[in-house]
Length: 165
View 1 (cartoon, rainbow, N blue to C red):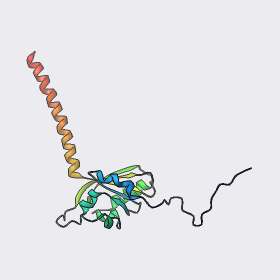
View 2: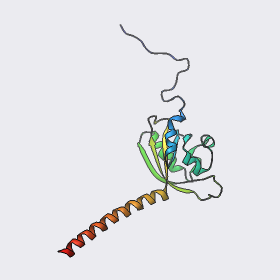
View 3: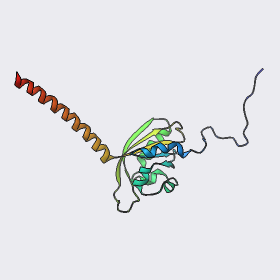
């Protein structure tokens, strides 16, 4: 005896279609100091955090009606990265790009390091994190300075030991 537990739907849902995202699930991204967007594989913004909203200079509601591609000076790299991550070729893809801003007085594009990552719903939602390159450079510089200070300290200690002997 076999049991058939399949359920027929009046309007079958495609295998990859998910219910609409709950934006409150992404509220934690507003606590980050980096720019974050959750996008579909075609670049449509589902969520943008407060930092990205502030940097671009438009409201979250306005940004969510547009694609993320519109805000990049050269969107081809972002398109390629999103396609590769959505297609499961890579779990994460990184590149450097330039972000356009709508804020008056900021005509220059903002150089950013972009990280495109998979989410639990890889085929429908992707995470795009953007770090201002100046911020990344500053962090790298601080790490190098700390390393150099440690080496200098060790060198002075060794030199003092040699003088003592």
